[in-house]
Image (tube, rainbow, N blue to C red):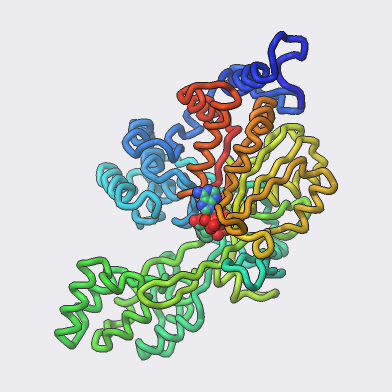
Length: 518
Ligand code: NAP
């Protein structure tokens, strides 16, 4: 990489770095030697197509103001938390598009947006009901594939490999899926949508407490009737008992004491039973046995989960890989398994079926110019898309430099993909690899400490047009990394705090600072 300022210019190294960063970031040049030369020096930023409200740092009111006067799908999108976290089973844009077309009626799926988002969505659809919006063309990020979240492809598990040591507190798995003859294609940065199947023990438990055989036909949204066992396995969430179910049980309880308790629980969003699953609630109130059709009607639809893809199709034609952190947590006094992560990472074996679709990202992409350097910050499962990036860059012989900053708890227990990373360091594909293991030392060390230690280097990479990527935890890590990126700009670019903030904002608007956080 060579800096933007010629060697002959009369500046010391610090001034040179500052000026290069200034031109690269503030003026939008962003393209030193070895970087993409395709954009103009004063490239416009964030036009309408870019969804200017798609910035999680903006308050809800500002986001809504930016979308004022736009079609309903855009205004709905502005109400989302803008994290593209996939917790709702969509991306922010596709969730809002589905509400606007009337295909999705649940307005409470944006968990990071919480009540504020749900209320804003309710207000918006009250003003313009989705049926009216149905006439409007809605931008969709779905790909041209015939498979989608509503029509997933039935693929096959190829292999599941544990990435963490058996003694590690975390259980992280690498899952390879055969795409068979689907013709599904994806790009590095895309996500794979997985339609989970509920744990058979849980399904058996619910059938048992209901006294059902499982063959009873029940209605499923968007389809014809199917046997209760299939519907409970594939279509409905059993992991949480919603207030609607508690209300129904209260109405059908023959024991007045149970009915009172259920009414109280429904009014307090589950109260002490808030984390209990459907089976536990039915067991607890044996006098409450509503008709099966009514019971099923209160259950929430089981949504697909999105995982960042951790493979390049150039290296693994016919397959897609995911890095799955197996979720296990305690709630309402019992240990529980994450629905999708347990299905995919633990219960599935090679040859098993799994329904999948590709969720294109459009935003979290490698630079168009293969010579552009990239800096990737990905602790924990946040490393997933960077495995895809690195495989892609190796497969395409991209000449751009690659810097990965990875962190996890213990070097010996959860250094994910260590073998591949060592190999890529040896071959030179990885120009730099920095690691931070938080629990190996008395004082915690996080990825951003490595960034700060290498602040001068990081600044000069940015000055030479590098893209800066962050993937992983949205709540703690991503804001801390963001703050330290500004700190580096201030320290090494001699910028004031406001200028450093403007510099980082500009990087984001130029799509050189990209986040895939959840
Ligand atoms: P993680 O929890 O992000 O932990 C990875 C490393 O980051 C650990 O060493 C951790 O240290 C460290 N860390 C903690 N706070 C940090 C901070 N403020 N700045 C920088 N590093 C920090 O990794 P993971 O278990 O692989 O999970 C990744 C994240 O994805 C989780 O945080 C979780 O929120 C999210 N997640 C999402 C889903 C989903 O389906 N959407 C599923 C699973 C996980 P310590 O642990 O020692 O503090």
